[in-house]
Image 1 (cartoon, rainbow, N blue to C red):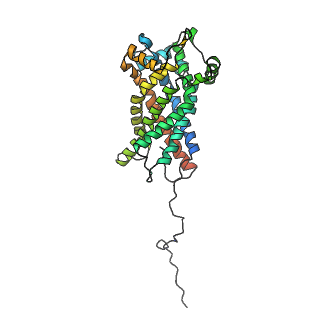
Image 2: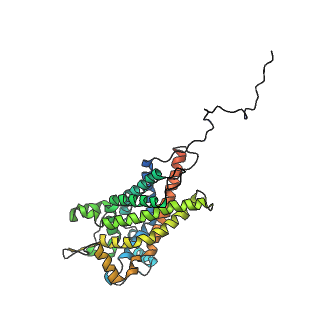
Length: 332
C-alpha cells in the first residue's frame, strides 16, 4: 500500500485559527506610574539647558518696576550683564529651585495629563476632541500647580536675589533653605503666595501647550507631511511653544511681581493680584504685559521642545526595551 508523500513546502497550508505564533503583538502602553516618572525626568533634564533664560526672563520682568529706568535693553544685554557681574553662578542662580519645581509641578501636570489623555482617547487611537483636550490640560495644570507653588516662590526669589542691593539679599543657600526660611520667617502659608496667578498661569500654559502639541502632531500626520519621529516632535512642540508664550506671558508677569514682593514698613508691597495688574497698566502701559517676550519664549520654546522630545524618546526606549513593543504607542 503506497503512502502519500508529505509536502516540503508548508507555506500554503492554513494554520489553525487558534495559533498565535504569527499574530501581531498588541502594543502595551506605558503604565501611568512610569508616565509620571518620565515627565519629571524630561522636565528636569530640559531645565538644565534653559535655566539661564529663566533667570533672564525673571530679571527683565522686574526691570522698570514702578516706572523706574529699565536695567536691561535686550535679552542678550541682560544675559551678558548678569554673567559679567555674577558669573556662571549668577545665570544659574536658583537652579536647585528650578529642578525642584520640575520634580513637583512638571511631574504632576505631565503625568496627570498623559493618564487622562489615555482615558479619553477616541476608539481609533486619535486624541479626544479639542475642547476635551483643552479641559484635560486645564485640570492637570491646576492640580500640578498646587504641588509646585512652593518651589515656584523659591525659584522667583532665588533668581532675582542678585539684582538686589547686597544688604537686602536673602542669600538662600539652596531651595530647601529657601523653603525652611520662608516657613520660619513668614509662615507656611506664604509658600503658596501667588497660588491663584500660579494656578491660572499653569492652567493656561497646560491648556495651550498640551492640546496644541497633541493636535499639531495629529494634523501633521493626517496631512501626510510628517510621520512619527524626531522632526514631527520638534515642529509640533515649537507650534505649542509659540501659542503658549503669547497667551501665558501676561499672567506670568503678574505672578512674578506678586511672588517677589516685599514687606515695606510692615505692609505688603501689593494689596492683591488686582493691585499688581492695575499698577502695571497705570505705570508701565498695557504692552508691559508682554515685557520679556523674547527671553520667555527663548526659555519656553527650547524647554517645551526638549521636554516633549525627551518624553517621546524615553517612552520609545521604555516600550522597546521593557515592554518589548514592536510599534511605538505615543503617550501624547
